[in-house]
Image (cartoon, rainbow, N blue to C red):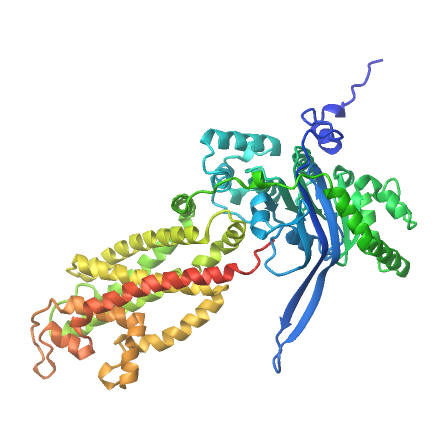
Length: 620
């Protein structure tokens, strides 16, 4: 009788990942590193205050405590899991001990027994957020190269960067997707990329917020086993986990259990069952241990709530916490300055690198840009068609002036609204990376303004060429330059609104109010001579007026005479036309100076607007 062949799971990658017997792995029981880092937190309390607006009366202030007297310790070489029911404070604890929160917290956060600042913690650690946010037009390889150059020491050679990327790609299973764009990846694949980004500079502390959520069981096991190897190399690895698959929970060496913002347990995963057995809870042999624990912590039964409360009281005992803290910190070396020696890229290099990335993203987003450009040209043709082949006589004066006024007003509208979402599109990415000191906000802002102005330059030149050709304008370079300045001012105005308003809808509402006030002062709808002096002086606050007066002055100043066909209503030269509309040709360069000054001030104020928004906590 033939002997049946059985599949030997010993060499199956799934078996390796779940049981940590990969041949590349070392024996976890005998770490090969020196204990040089212990992260501790003592009696952390985090409270959030929210204001609920009311239709009538003052807003209602609601206070909620997210973390209540939570303490813990973790040393290098440990893979620590933070687990608990939804809303138990897992992500808040992770963000607090990693110094990624903008709000204040009560308690102590210590590294090697000494208080650690936000700046030091961010330099010494990586954070894989629950929501992956990245520049989605980049490939995996480009994203890793970008982050390597921004996060690693600036003296690092290209060969070292390549070797590091190859190593991470091999160990995280990224080789098959290394040349794929991030926007085409699945959620699980993007999480692997996010993990690789945080490991690129080999940080001694790594935080991962629900790193296995959304992954299939194999991918989750592979990721956790990778994190265990990272921890065993001498790192501190802390992960929040939300009811991991059966068997995956045991891959963690230690676990913190939270419920309603309180600490129920911290210790070895292998001792969790013994801890719960003291309170009469025995996990069935065929039941998922993690599910069982969460169900107990989340139970509404009176007895269960009393037992969980007793667990929390025991874990929050001050004397017990001090004993644990002293046992963790007694032998650890006190210095960790060698982890802070990496020097980041200079400001100009950051600008050039971010500009290069912006150009790549811009080019790969060509469909959207072509649609934007096509819309602009289409509207230009619609705007210019009624004025095609205009003649030079007094009958055509109104048509010529109508053409210049309509063209200028539409240019202000089109270019300002095209930029009104400039900073909303990438804000979540930039907010997180600037907060994590990956690059400076000013470097990013300058690179974005440069690429924005380059695109405006290209659009304006082609737009003007098409419109001037249809109408038959005998144009000069100065007219093209003036329209360029008007376009830059309009884009700067839209970018300014984008910087101060977090939602496009809010920016549009504000812009509508401004336009209602500024448009009548353009010179197209009322005579300036009839305006009171106060309103007349406000015309310089209107982009429409500055554009219309500049364009009109430049065009009509060159017209020395016009054939007069109507003696009773004769505007026989360009200066007469300007006087009729209330424009002053001698103010041409003054208007240009105001427009250029507006561009400069709008971009400076826009920077401070984005900086103000950066003070809020980024998405974690």
